[in-house]
Amino acid sequence: MKNKNNIYLGTLLLGTTGVLIGVVVDSLFLTLVAGALGALVGSLIGWLGGRRYLIIICVGVLLGAWLGHQSGDRDVLIMAAGTGGAISGFIANQLELFFKK
Image 1 (cartoon, helix red, strand yellow):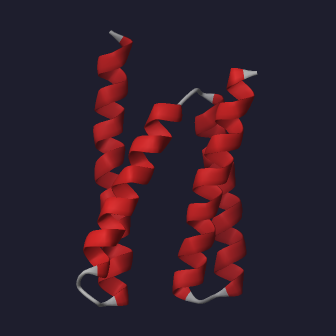
Image 2: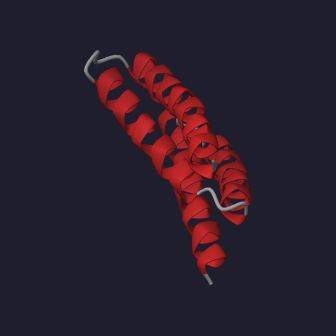
C-alpha cells in the first residue's frame, strides 16, 4: 500500500508540474503533453520509492520559482524554476545515496 501512495504522489506532483509548464508557455498542446510526460515520470519515480526525492525537487522548484518571480520577468521565472528543480534533483540524489548507507 505504501508503494501505491508513492506512485500517486509522484504522478500528482510531476503531472501538476508539467501542466503548469504548459500553462506558463500558454499552449494547450504543450499543457497536455507536459502533463502526461510529468505524470509518467512521476509514477515511475514513485514506483521506485522516491518520496523524499520528489519532495526535495518540489522544494527546489518552489524556491527557484520564488526567486525568479522576484525579477518580474516571466522567462527568468521559467528558467529559475527549472534550475531550482535540477539543482535540488542533484542534491536529492546525493541525499538518497547518503541515507541508503
